Image (cartoon, rainbow, N blue to C red; front, side):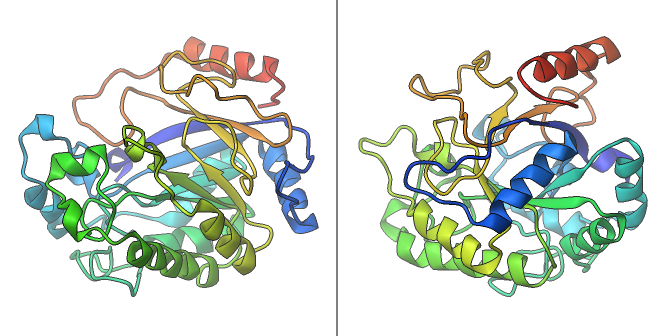
Length: 316
């Protein structure tokens, strides 16, 4: 089971706990930010049906998306032991875990009642992974953050973006108001059925970065919904831009704050001076498990990453 996921290193950087223009965080939120900053080191579990197929879906692999979705038929992590994993992370010095509760293909790693495309209803395993991780994290005193993709290739109502066109989504069937309610219902499950959640880690807003005009995600509605369910739960969004009101920390994918070695950061993006910062990077080449991925960072590279992040205000 150890080879079925890739650990991603998360470094929580120090930020000033001030309110942003247009958004006043609650006292519970500010306390949660401070706790997040104290964690310094986190583990990102990027794990789902793509771990079986050893790739995120892409047209370049010449695999029909319908075939990719069938990976759920073979997902049976019979040796998974959440308590052993979480204890190992804690012993390594991690203060929090971010887990991919739902990735871009729309497969949910918990017992969602919003559709059957989930770990309980669509796999031979039939057990709730989020529940097991949540119980273990609560027992060990580690924060649990939940990654949640805003895009979903499996649903017709998702508004087709640049990646959706690759999987054959039909724009005429899009219905974002309906899809927004679906996401809110799923977030309600995650924030009411699994105890205290440290943060929701959104991804996928970049799917509409080639639209002729800016797409209205109604992110304020999503953020307010999260705040109403768990006022202390932080909100982050991997959109590679300056913070939007309602967001409580800023993450940098494969980059240090203020750098843009990937070319993904928007030219007008500014590093937040009012919130915690997070660097999110892989320990090998890819995000999900690939048997052919042996490009692991050396110890000196990892230490250098920690030192450089610390130099930007982090203690790791």
